Image 1: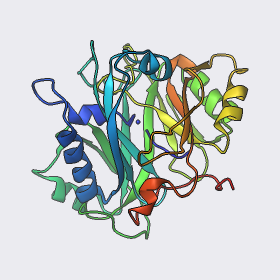
Image 2: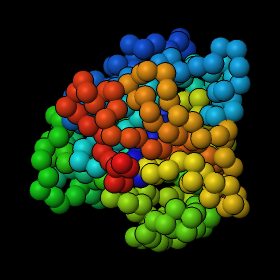
Image 3: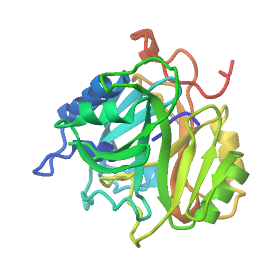
Length: 311
């Protein structure tokens, strides 16, 4: 699993970058990226955009968004074992209200800290702390993204300005059908079930932070990729076309478009990718990033690679 994309791809990307008047600018994606860089110690990798198709149906076919949607993308290396992709979309009919975290489409990114009390003291006056429970707290950023701090014993190096921060603890997603989501991630994807309770489950897929799945508590519609709060989770594979062909045989999976290769001379020229939906419409992506991408020649910061490089 290569990208933990809040498409959050933890699209609170959008979420982070829609201005009060509804406008979206590249400057706002820079602002959110700088916040992650300063507070959470993220390493900027590249920016690109706008990604758009002004006349055809590429955006609708490949990303399930309005044909005239456009987005800016910023990729960050987040700690020792995660990549975070932030998106800023403009799209006709875009929903700009962040989904209720208890409804399908709700999600949050959890960070591991060594001392929750010290982290809370530092956050006072900087970010809004919504809820504090034993060993964790929920945080809402100024740009709309939901985060969680989890007190975790560890001896990893300090990241960013937040005291005791050592990395990503997990990515959490609210789903309509917990059993189906667990079956997909442990069966089709091959993840390991770490914990299973009545309303939650934790699955580890590869050498990355685990995925927490939560059963919905309130009804709601899953956001589109271009909506504020839209998101997807990306899996690193060594052959996107072969993985796509296999998924085409899996009941309940819907492939979006066809496997794509980025060949426009940008920072990730040569990347292979394809989106698909799994149980209850959850958005996923297949991605293969060959070694030696153009952006890697201009920065010492590198993507976390979850699979061996293909030669």
